[in-house]
Image (cartoon, rainbow, N blue to C red; front, side, top):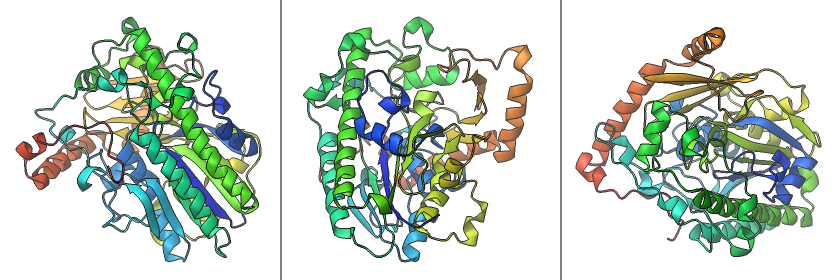
Length: 473
């Protein structure tokens, strides 16, 4: 394929189905929808880990969390494992980031030529409290719902700056002779779920469709999900009114994000860069928004682990929908191919494929893997064809048929007639890793992280937080 520039747009916590092009009946995302019309939309894209820091480390390196030891939000990317940015920079490409990275620090070589307005993890350490596994510090996160609504927030203002920086950057580098990559990372619609009033008001509360199994009597009774609710103080149900208000604010943040994306795409057009620039839009993970009685990410249900993924630009099929399952780790060869950069022998063992090639091909079967660690016992997801399998260490497995049960209400794993399917999935999983040994290594690494910080007492003094602070406070 021809070499072009690449504008890679990443959002934070955007539910795959919460945009018009993915079929949501209310959420207004005209710029994302237009991008999908101009290009290719993937219906089965997944994060390699449904939590911010590991997802972003995996996206950068093309490797899974267990391969690089990025277990949770206390294990940020530090540049030691080469990223696609390192590959591009070493071959003379301008490769800059704007906005949220959630890497460790600007003291590390993260693979970018410049890091503009970057957000790193808190104090270079991230969230350490969940590393105290033997005596956990339970979190009071009900404020995420209680504070949702119309208004202003530092995150809205941060994304305004990110969009402005991107427009300036495109103007500055429009005429570069060698293909460049701009990694533009917005923080919306991550909490706080506070939307500009005019956008919040777009969504009448009585018209909002609530998430699957939001009612208390429908919550799945599973040890891992039950523990997550308890850990974050969600085991007391939120009211329907609270969840409708939360959803309206979240929808408003999605529309705000879409406006910022539209601002940048408009500048791209004004600079006559559309014919020489490919575009990727995706998110690091999703958001539960009350589904299963939970708020946030951290689960293997579709609302948490699935992500939107759209590509557009030269050589990208227009108006195409691809059902082949893909992962954010596929971004490594995808970025390299876009700008004509070459992989090195070290990259030969990546379990990733170029999405430009997948976009050109008929739909195919492909097994996608995701993992989550750090708060409760580790869990692992495999998606192949219509089935999703979730293996929990020390808890019952789950199996869902996403074709007949897209809302994942019916766990097929315990049913005798389906036994060969989870058994086959477990064999596949154990070819990838040893789930119990990996879970044990997580605990060892968490303990080491606690000791490096100064011990358990020092960690317990760390204030819990829902949102990393924006640059400059």
